[in-house]
Amino acid sequence: MAPPRRSGAEAAVLLLLLLLTTSSVGAARASSPRVPAVIVFGDSTVDTGNNNQIPTPLRADFPPYGRDMPGGPRATGRFGNGRLPPDLISEALGLPPLVPAYLDPAYGIDDFARGVCFASAGTGIDDATAGVLSVIPLWKEVEYYEEYQQRLRARLGPRRAAAVVRGALHVVSIGTNDFLENYFLLATGRFAEFTVPEYEDLLVDGARAFLARIHRLGARRVTFAGLAAIGCLPLERTANALRGGECVEEFNEVARSYNAKVRDMVRGLRGELPELKLAYISVYESFLNLIADPAKAGERGGGVLRHGQVRDGAHVQRRRAADLRRRRQVPLLGRVPPHGEGEPAHGQPHARSMLPGGRPVTMSGHVAMNGPVDRGGNEITCITKDF
Image (tube, rainbow, N blue to C red; front, side, top):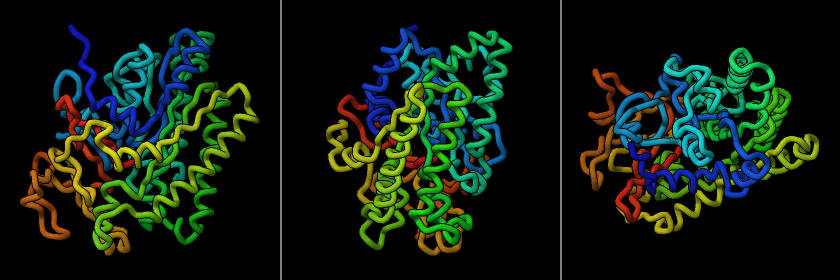
């Protein structure tokens, strides 16, 4: 069977998130002839299906999610139209093209020895964030990591298991939910407990503690992604309709401030733990560049609307200021037809905002499924919400 064709969609995901830069991949390869596994922590940018196995409304196990998966449409729980960055990273390193979710019963320890994902859509660095939509908190992801190592030792023996963990590339992508689905959504009491700078410090301290802990557990190669321009995510631009649907600069300013603190934290931790090969991955500028000059990614028009809605198979959410103040969940609207015709009245669910069987979708979050189209006619995977 011929290998799956690499599409412009796959290239765009790597460009957008930059979870691995050329230098960090090169460093991993240069220091060892082989990376034995990819191990993943974080939110929906990297969740390959764990939320399918837990009681949360935040799931991606129904169409049109997965409509462009290799081998045909298949909703695997990935929050996108196809593979996610960990999958592409794994394949680029000569490992399997799909990184399995740790909670997926279809996989076992032999699969996980070459790649495993503990990420959960909707989670954050702050434990309170995971409680908003009843998803897996970061501390639990680390507990699964410990359990995984126990299973690995039982299967491979202590020395081989330790070598897998030590040589594995650990990918971490997390943080946006802490701001957009927790602090600024007023979903928990954090907004009353902390100023924005204080909350940034809380998250940076939490990220540092997490990185130090997985280092104690054996991780040696780690990439930690900063925040994208969170004020330019489609949901935030749609909610900013009174100001023309432009980016919310206040949120972008928070992302820049937080990212600067994370960079300083990473620099300090590298100094304290010289054996830890820790790379901070900046995604902010590349995200803005993709918005400012989509033609560089092959965008031909017709995918992303100015105010942040995405058509052609995308789910779109609206969230009014009143919804934010009342801390309400909002409907995940159904497919928006070309040219925007047939949209629901303001604040009303679309007739197609239902799961099979007529169950309404009431998730808090959004993913742009199929946005711009590249010059080869391939739809570009566009992950627009950091879960």
